[in-house]
Figure 1: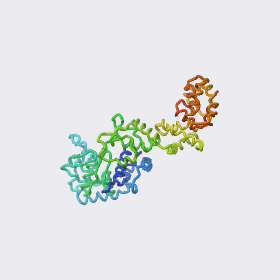
Figure 2: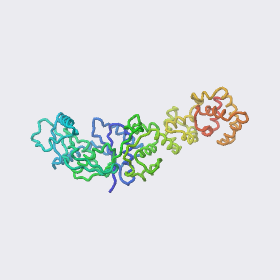
Figure 3: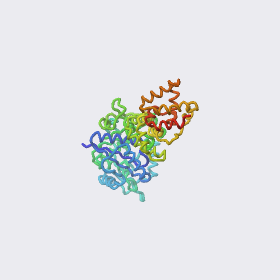
Figure 4: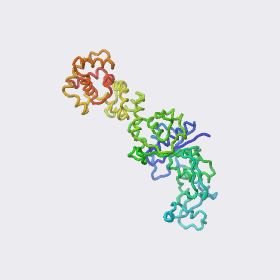
Length: 466
């Protein structure tokens, strides 16, 4: 059997973090099994579906590296096929027209609630003669669902579950205006797309029992189901914007790396022993459905940020420069020159050790490309007192005479100068950092000097020395 999974978002908004995890799990399982991963856009809600949302979803998946096989399927375009299946069930006496008005349905629900029963359709028109239908009412088409026994589900994550058919009413397949319902469209599409595994959030669990009844009525084989627990916030409450429940595009804008994001999403509910850092290739090799937990995962922004810092530290300098170059040029209002790129290349290893996100990396990288004289932040201004500036002036000569521009040699020269002057090295190092970077906090001072080079180092000291 060829494994075929699918991701089927509704284009009514951004690609939510929970939906992104669902897409990742489907993609990984398909790739692990050597199968296919398909994308279906469930755009049947015409009032809320937008082209902009479709574009955002696709861009989000592309950023995450979740490529799909075959052409994208648009559910609304298949409405005639959905209707065809429903009407065939009608011909086989497996469905029937219901002429209940909205007011009658509301009254039915209220009566059942008053009786302490679930508010469900009571089958009023299930066996009633259509000749009794009132005039002027456009009927809905309902499935003749089993009324006795149980519907069983062997879920690959949740285990074996059974629901009494008495709890499931005759669901609507076609609305009064003839449009197919979501429940019908999903089943028909999954069947026609040969989906072998439906991997989705456990908020769809109730739908699955109804959908199984529809598979059985159509005489179709069912896919295997795997229902993933939802994601909660770090406090255990339902995930919301205050926990960081944003669109995937927002995390990209916030400076999270793709591989860090996928690694974090993978670990939300799935594990491989004690492994925390998992590469894409390892994820494909190791992923299985058996290792998905049954309890809700907790989204923790701090953990995501720490993981992102790890990925930044281990990312290649060239790739990081490619990622931050547009933002750097936007901030300094000019294109980066060869000299800028050389400094950034020399300084990147020191910069990325301290950055947790790309904006932090961009902010710290500005020290190497700012025009002279560089601006000073408040802490640097406090450090560069008149006395400190006087201590910097002799360094112009000391560094100008330095033959070897290397970290060890520079440190030896500056410490030797401090000893000669009878001062502590920190009395030179702090104002030197402020003079070279304009900041009170920066990468190691010798890393900065190596990245800037001799001429720029001396020029920046001259700009503030007295």
